[in-house]
Amino acid sequence: MNPDAALAPFEQAWRALDAAVRALPEERFLAPLRGWSARGIVAHLIGWNRHMIEASRSILSGETPAYYADAPHGYRNLNAAHAAAHSSLSRDGLLRELEASLLEFKTFVQSLPPAEIEDSHGVLHYSGRPATVGGIIRSLTQDYRDHAAEIDELRMAGSSGESAASS
Image 1: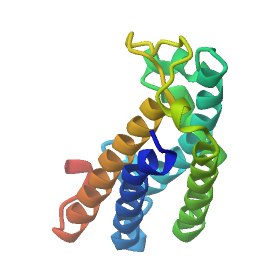
Image 2: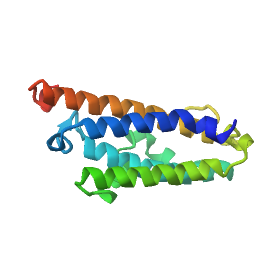
Image 3: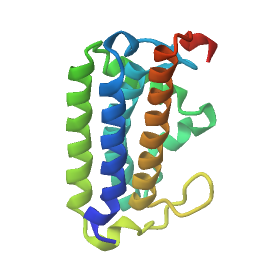
Image 4: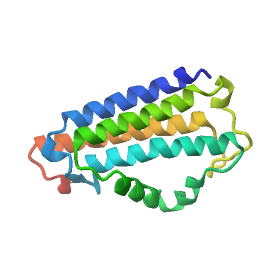
């Protein structure tokens, strides 16, 4: 698969998330909804973009990605580490960092021969299916879509006068 074609849905999902964060009133950026704030989501995604470069390199080397070890914990350990590593409270600063991490991931993927996007190199995802860079891209894309919807929900909760905690 052509790397640019593989990345197109991911970039679209990133743009939707970026728009959702920017539409969120500044005071809602730090407000939690079901345990996440928009700030926490953006920090989480910065970390995952960079972490998925490492995971992709592992797959391409025929090795199991290290992050699989945190799967039984719902990735709580990794998510906490990403949120701590990207601790800025600045919405614009974190969005710039998110874009930079996205560019790092995109540049990495674009450097790959097309056949490497879907080649598992014998690595299995913990679910039992083949682990591929394409699978990582699709998973990140869905993560961005899900989090954009959460941020939209946070924005709507704030605009309707509801408490984010009661949602």
